[in-house]
Length: 338
Ligand code: KG4
Image (cartoon, rainbow, N blue to C red; front, top):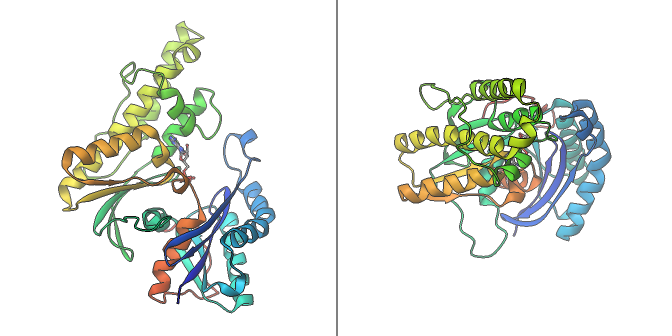
């Protein structure tokens, strides 16, 4: 008998629903919200309202594409946190209501676990998946962590950012350059045309495996400020070099600690996850690092790097196997540790 899980993701500004049967992806529908672009960042109240509008059509479409009915589902997995509380409430309430109506269990999923477990989503027969243990670099708009993954049920944060996340560094620096939100993909695109050695930005000196990106952000701002004094067109005429140098510095910071983690833990592979793992420079650098060290790199397909319900359904599948269901009274959480 196969196990079919519906996953629901609503932690930030993407409403997503997906169906996974025995680890195989059957559908993954994402409704992105455009209302935030005008504000240069996600507006929480607008996000919750858009989730309310999107959730029913998104779930219906995911079921339709998967060719399953509500009565075929074995459980509903939903993102419990971390994320925006109003947004999480929409997904959580919907998942619980559907589960009550269908008389099936609910499974609460940690969004960060889901990013890590996205590597186990199978889209074709014979597809390889990571062997435990491995380390995962989790880099998104809200998190930058190095996680030691011993099993789907045993993960330990070995290092985390003490201030900004890598995605924030991309987005905030892009914002002062006048690029649209989110700036990460724009920096990625511009960086291909620029010289990564054109500018030097500061790198943190923090002990252990923790990250910091606020010093880099400040030195980026000072570079702009100093040059704009004498050349008002500085950003426009140097945008590709600025983007390439910024991206190279972020990658250097990420990889220094990742390499230290690889030295500390006896693992054969490194995975990446989260929105910033869509960055072409980051993807190449991880692949290079693993090649040099004779390790295996697990780089997710771009569709699974940003927020999606496929990873939530996958994490739900692992919990379903253990019959690890949640009580209907379980509330969402804005901030939870891994
Ligand atoms: O995981 P994610 O979708 O959700 C949040 O944590 O909110 O990550 C979003 C982050 C944003 O900071 C965005 O700029 C960044 O991922 N991002 C990228 C790229 N694509 C998305 N950063 C650099 N290069 C990219 N190609």
